[in-house]
Amino acid sequence: MTGPVFTSQSKTCAQWEARADLVVLGSGVAGLTAALRARQLGLRVLVVTKAAVDDGNTRWAQGGVAVVLDGEHDDGDSVAAHAADTVTAGAGLCDAAAVRDIVGAGPAAVARLRALGARFDASSTGLARTREGGHSALRVVHAGGDATGAEVERALVAEAGGRRVPVLERHVAVDALRTPLGEVAGVTVLDPHGVPGVLRAPAVLVATGGLGQLYQATSNPEVATGDGLALALRAGALAADVEFVQFHPTVLYTRGARGRCPLVTEAVRGEGAVLVDATGAPVMRGVHPLGDLAPRDVVSAAITRRMAQAPGGVDDHVYLDATAVPGFARRFPTVHAACAAAGVDPARQPIPVTPAAHFACGGVVTGIDGRTTVTGLYAAGEVARTGLHGANRLASNSLLEGLVLGERAAEAVAADLAAGACADPRLGQPPETDVAPVAERDSLQRVMSRYAAIGRDAEGLAVAGSVLDLSSVDSPLWTQEAVEDAALTLVAAALIAAAARRTESRGCHVRTDHPGRDDAAWRHSQPLRLSPSGQPVLAEKIVEAAS
Image 1 (cartoon, rainbow, N blue to C red):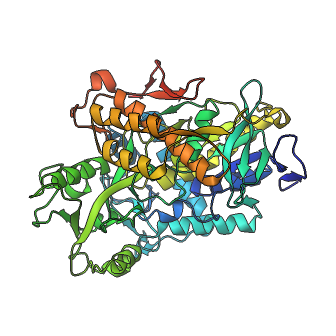
Image 2: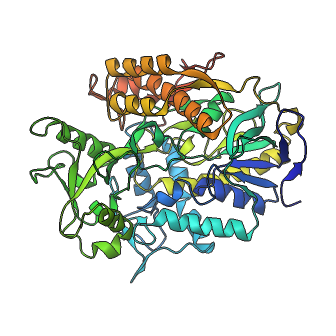
Image 3: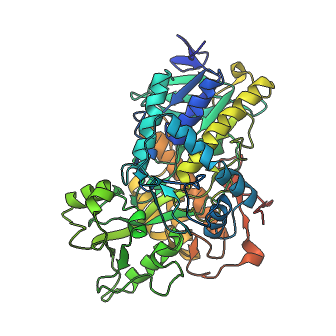
């Protein structure tokens, strides 16, 4: 068989049921790469996505794919140099072995993507390359100027359609089915009308992206609500590094904007644009040796400090002066269109920008093969914590990770199925209750933005935790909105717990009451899981970062 098996009646309260070898949650780069590889390996696969198949976070990625290609790189650049830049950006928490492995697999992964029809921008000597924050060389390949994610998604969606990969659109996964031994054996889902269904499978891959909707302003789409991480935690999986949420230094600022804000890719700075404050003074002068191309955590923190120092009180944006960048509209058509819609001409005036929630650096703990700590549960992409990113992501490593880990996760599933290591899906049962604590989303986003964003301290984190506790109400998970709000509530509690315990500043975790980095006490990741009562608890055993 090439597709999932549907039956008319479930043995649970669900109104319909389907079976597959692998259920993939998410249709971004990691999810579709995994689904395509699983089909090549002969598995029955079913992709589940909350929106349309091409409406995930991948399409919004602007900058490109960081990769050192054979015969197409700067003199002196190498995979080892790319790995070294990644470790430096990760501020002491990267798993160096995982970094070398994943970065080293990048050239082959990009070659496979190009073989599927992805079209990258060319130069007179091969693929066009640019430089972004934290990189020591021009090694970021891009498509459509600043529309790399859209092109990657286009190629993967087209290939999935051509291979007739089944996709269940506009369905949200609620919880994992688990066997009496705790193995994952499928998921429960809701359709757009709240009709429940069951997907039985010996393997579930969570590739749901990030959690940017925890905050008022983010580069993430509306579907990035952390529900994949929440589902994995409720299934018994271990998470780590959840306190590290990277804020992109530059999204387009418009007063009062909420939700997804247009990204101004740091490739604009790679082409020579400079961050300045309202007086025209450079923001990054004297802050870091790489200046405007410092790692994202450094730039975001510098912008936040400069805004706080603005005359007359706290300002809410700075400016990116790209007036000297030649051919801006041609090189950055997506950014140019967003600026034009806001009444800004980048060729003539600086672009108002501000930091916004961008990428989660942590997530579900996995190996470099996508396996989690729970049998039958796999994770890949932004929702996973492989050790690649540490305390801060290096620019344009994210699409690379999704390409590499998506394929490897599918191969791990195939190997585990062949070895009989997964559970019988018929033994999977949904949780005994479909009720979870839910906080009102607007209040949650306001308190997280105020107390748990770039600058944090013990008092503010305690306030955020109290607000969540007092405002959360046990609610049935009968709609997509309820599932998402429950996920945001759980993930926020996990982030607050981890951030409160880490009494130092490292990477994109900045404690204003503990401004220094403390390698002696804190050069390790904090593992986190749920207690029997469903509360996030930090484990005593630490996950050591490799040297």
